[in-house]
Image (tube, rainbow, N blue to C red):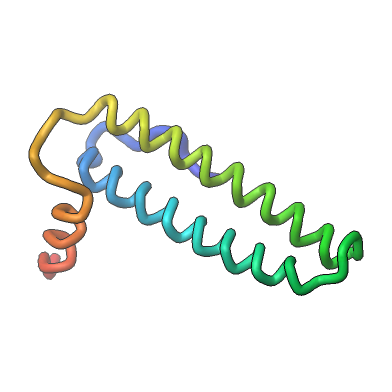
Length: 94
């Protein structure tokens, strides 16, 4: 089960970066599932199973987006972007 709020000791910039990555991953999953659903005969069990999975994944995207919006609202304003944060994390060996 996903947490709605991260602990206050977590850097909100990292949280925003993580949430952004989760959204992008979920959207990629949605794309793949929708492509697969397009190949299934309409109204078959496989078609309906994929449609249900797509609906649940779409809801997940909205949940993460709402979390990210709250995190952004609670974060101090700055000049860094999420891309800047990701690059700094990738170059940090820790």
